[in-house]
Image (tube, rainbow, N blue to C red; front, side, top):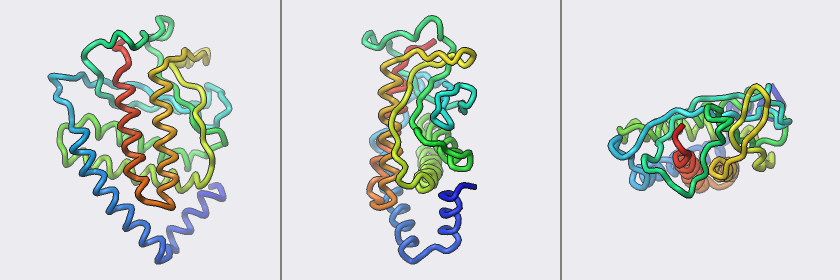
Length: 222
């Protein structure tokens, strides 16, 4: 385990009073954010939307080597009505997964894992029709993303390559909707990083995640 991750584990084992107060604030603000989220982003009826699975590939170490991707399935609510302003998926890559790179420095697996788990849990939350299950899944997702952000510390992240990736050749076909989704994902991670110092940023991070999945839902159906 890296020094940063080791430091985090130690801080969990020997939490200070200040750390306890911060975790209490996290939970209070997370509960408030979940109430707001349930109101503003109520589940869409299946009659007005299509549920789909997409594969999201993330660069584990930021060096662009496509053999180092970790690809995860995510659930998305797709827009049923065709948007003429959204470009089609490149015909050469109709079945390709989505690629979003956000990490520039090398990230060890134990640091990346809560990021992966948080995104998958959040994607499951946004497609559920049960408000209680949605709130529970979002809470579990955000808790994982907060662990990830604490392990990241002040590591600066920026949006890298985005688009549809051919995993055999490594070629990426850019798409503006994927880029916009990547912008929201970067902003979400930055917000969760800021939440280490101001728990009010938890709600901002959740809003950015909602916007990311909303953008991905605008992609054309295959």
